[in-house]
Image 1 (cartoon, helix red, strand yellow):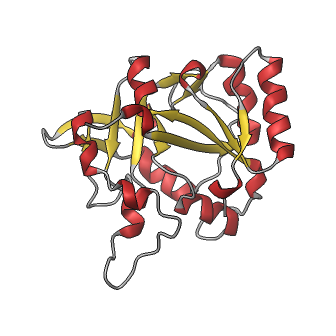
Image 2 (image 1 turned 90 degrees about the vertical axis):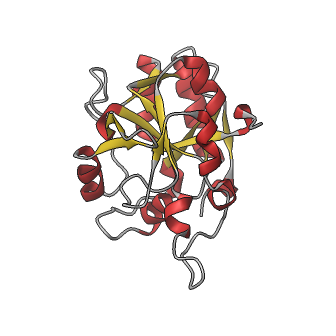
Length: 215
């Protein structure tokens, strides 16, 4: 039996997006009516555009769950290839200091409590090998050992490591701040910044430094 409370979910975003989240008290999908119009993107713009045009086909029924634009995306683990690309720059990604990137942390159990719809994948969202599921019993399809790996490059003996590392959990439309467990940050300066915003908007969401979540 999988303990859903122990399956963490991690969304990375620019720290300057936090104020909007605290103000409206929720994370929102890109097409949400309350989405941040001044949102600071941190990923690959070309990839984001491609994702926006893709629909999610749920296995094993083959039903269509909707567009990526309708979901708030989380990873199952930290130190993602995306964060590495943000740190190093290149391949349509503008390099940014890691201290400017924060983690919004939830869990599968908290999402279930929220009542929001969801789908999850066994790998990178737009890879041709990736499958999506909407039944929590199918969490066994996620390679959690690979998700937790600190080093995720493909190897001669396993050319699918990077894809599996980037398994995603997608929450339909929005997720209230009350269903977050905390904020993970790079350093003490960013922790103070996040805590000051929480105080400003009357939130008790704690921020904590997790240097090992970064490169």
